[in-house]
Image (cartoon, rainbow, N blue to C red):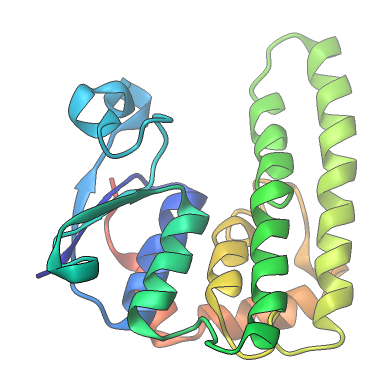
Length: 208
């Protein structure tokens, strides 16, 4: 049975559509229009109590019983374990994948997200302070990623769920007001990832 994907056309939503396509899993998209507050509807809160997209329902979960998963990082780990794809079984090999997945969840997402927010603030003084603060941190994070990618082809070694997670946000680099020409290794990685057929399908599928 297909995975039921509850999502919207956001970086976090794209992480999961890319992963599902790369893993070759069948899925149905259920758009949750966050601009209209649909993430607060009781039926959605049953599977995503923090009222955030994405969330999934796997009707053939562990033991053949349905299971729901919320939080994009948790979904990626679940899908990686479920399929045995893009998430290594060896503990040592898991460490860099988990490190870079957590790096994305804790920084390369929340910080550029603040850039998105302050670009829309009307008060000039508030906007200027916020943009200066979060643009600086966002560029620092791109620099951290660039240094890592000067040492490896993909962040965790082979392509992994960590790349899918980071790519969901790097996809919005123009909105972050970041020119990838300033980060040559990120630019190389980004081009390689976006050229993958599964990734391409994951970005083309309609989520809204």
